[in-house]
Length: 303
Image (cartoon, rainbow, N blue to C red):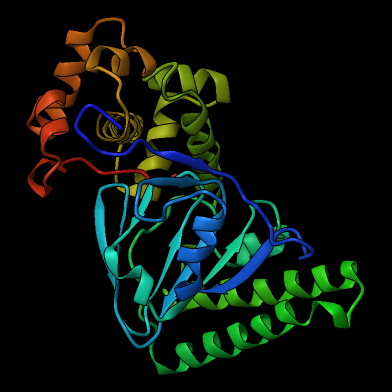
């Protein structure tokens, strides 16, 4: 438990069902609680899965939190949770009516990743498709579910490829249900590289100049690309990512504020306090006591 009485985040690796094709699983939300317990996990505490989750609600709403933002999945809505995000289900999970599709990073072919707009930035909100898009999603999910449960009807390698193809259909259908995405440009490729570097090194440096030098761009080029992708400057994007990790550590760990500052690369705890207070309006200690919506200032960058 953390110092605030909250459970610490548990890193959740992908554990495939025995005998199933590694890479993707389809299960009912109502089965998720018991499966979690069998694997020694509690879905009601903060978890950081290392895999993708596409969650769809049917007849009943479902509440959950993803990186301090509460979401309500209404009947017919979907939510895509990305690897590395901190999630927690609400108490209605045990009675949930819906489906969750789990799949590992790297399982889908690059053409699907491009067609489904899986590169950052990620828009984190539930999606309720219109009737035509919902029908396409339903048919894609039904076929994927059928083939997932018909493993014995095909050799394992063929079964895996069928699931890969059908999952591709599902995620592309989901992406289209969210509306058209911007066409890829040189600026979007620049941002993709910048995003990956920030994910890796946000605790090493918060200087745009360091990322620009490492990636072979000018700071101005990084800022233009980041503004086009997110509406934030390159410096704001880096700070947003640091702030998100600071909130995760403050709320979900037993680390003191000084230890959080050290982990995030601040040379002085007072500098970290100034950084945090400027962007949230409260001190790290006050946030740890009460991470209420009024303390959720800043633009989080999902990971």
